[in-house]
Amino acid sequence: MVVNGKQHSWERPANLMEFVESLGLDPRTVAVERNGAIVRRETWPDVKLEQEDRLEIIRFVGGG
Image (cartoon, rainbow, N blue to C red; front, side, top):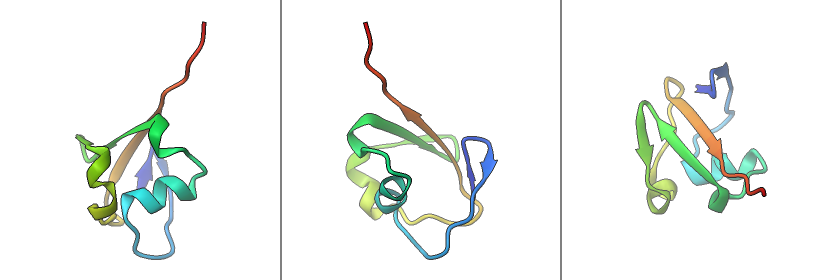
């Protein structure tokens, strides 16, 4: 699987929510694109990841 342009291995089948949490990210503060399409957050537990997937994970950062 490719995540943000870098090869990433995943040991076991997982859903998108588990994967985002395994990276130490707060799901409320990120958006995920999978294979060119934005994935709605409420569907993350149902999205099964595959080795050929390409993910882009964007983190929202507040500032002033």
